[in-house]
Image (cartoon, rainbow, N blue to C red; front, side, top):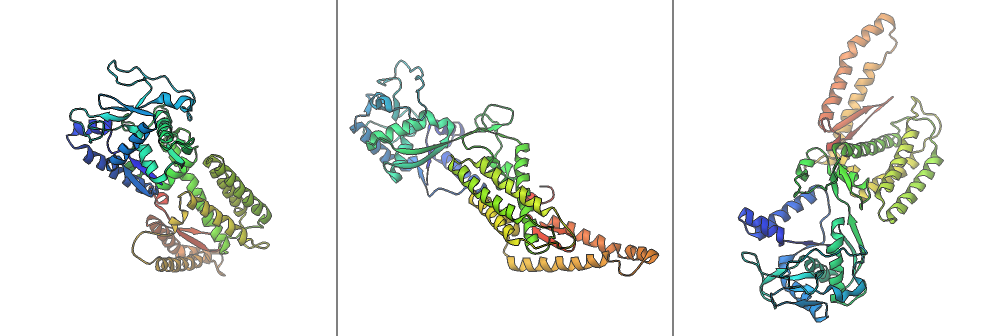
Length: 447
């Protein structure tokens, strides 16, 4: 995976001038902030970052190749333009009918209004590089074509970007690459993602409109996993509304998934006693879910359908676990729940959401030691609680007095449970036993 970094363009030059800093230092600041935000959101980095300013010689060579192949021309003013008419009817692969060009200045040195810049002649007080056509800098579209071709050559499997880049940026990339490589098809697939909107407004969230929330501020309230599931509940091609309400919906789905896994594990350990399980129905539903998820992801990455299928499996599994009893009745079915839990955890891990993170806390201490200590603490608390609740042979007034005498023990057990919850450890008292788990940040009090 390659990510191109545009570290010089009109916006950067303008903003750097306003701030009285160099374009290079401003671009570096933006890049580092972006990388930190992506890491905080648990977004995997690309294999390599390629910056425009580090590849100027390659860009110049790429432009020379397009000129040599008869698809571009230089002007007396030091500009180089792509000759769009040389593409014939092959331009417009992504958007079909090409919009009419905007009005050009009367002093434009283009041969045709639709031609676009590959190299821009230097302007006063702008950064520039020497080239065969004079001092200047690359056009926007040529940068990406050169960078991708350096790594992938004449064939690119997948190209991604926002839906607003389909035209003219990606159309122009296709034109440039096919003109340079002399090929019929350069890119196999283009994934154009929808924009994040402020709920109730048609405008996208962006810095220029000043209607955005920073990643750092967002993560003060919600986790990266919540944001990822929020995104998965809409098609990657669709615009999606951001609001606290939609984030809470995603958070509650993760809570439901984690709660089911906790209960299923308790059942497998014999700590959760239920009535007879419809094992055949659950095996059938698990198979159906596997097929549904596979079909959804093969259908243009239909993540909403995949999430719905997994949540339906969780709902049906919960339904089987709800018929709780005090005493076992009939054979148990731990195998099917083990398979369901394994599949659900694998699904979330595959899409970058790790429910297993709830089982560990950060730090240098041994996880095994922590587990053993909490296990012993919960077991001791359970014995105290069972003693406090046991009536023994006492009856009448003696039983009432016994309950009063043991009430402080129950209160101490409840207080311990509340104190541990504040530290990220949840204890659940069941009919004849108690279970525990480590809570993620989203599941702690006040989150």
